[in-house]
Length: 309
Image (tube, rainbow, N blue to C red; front, side, top):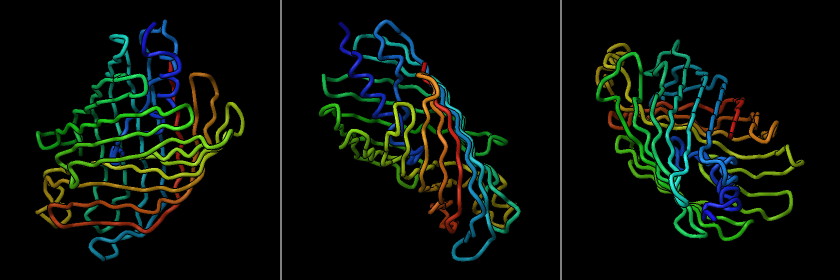
């Protein structure tokens, strides 16, 4: 019998399903192996994640100066195929596209679009009966796709491990490495604890949550979410904004959200999510040029679809 058995993969799915520091945070733990892997007879599994979010206008400051109210539209599409190579090893190959669009009618040094298109290459490995690990690299283009050069090419690396203490408690350890970021190495530690029949504390970045099982198909939760990434703006970005030093500059973008949501398992292979609340923190940090923009809190709403087959 394969060591990657039903119970192991079902548990692993629960653990990885909400993980990604993002990107930043970035991203620490990527999204999950699939429920399809719970069946040993299935040699290949697929993951498809779609997301769309809107954040309302938040008063934004550039180095303490009010530059106007900014709204945001975020889009994310990720597809990964996972063939089982050996009893202990799953390969992960796919693609990821994430895009942040901002209102640029204001006066600050604000990019109108930050986005990346990347490949996903990695593996999941069962180290021992109670230990699982994932390594994933995402080589691609990070920045304005209108102008693509070597400065836009990046390859963040994500590594994670899970210790399965038992069915109700698991610990995870993560590491994100992106040499272009202000924080090139970002470690993380978390856990998933089902402390009552219907309650789970899922303390995993970038989506820590307190979850309540309304029934077998509907879950309510209260939690936070982090979206982040490191990008390179265009070669004339600084000239356009009257700050030539920002031409081809690197920017770390981060936003942190807090609010309630619902996850509805429409089919065994399909889950829909909806949540809303407040974006409590948002910043664009041109850290090597000492230019920073940050926003006041603003309401947000987002929808997501997760397919595992």
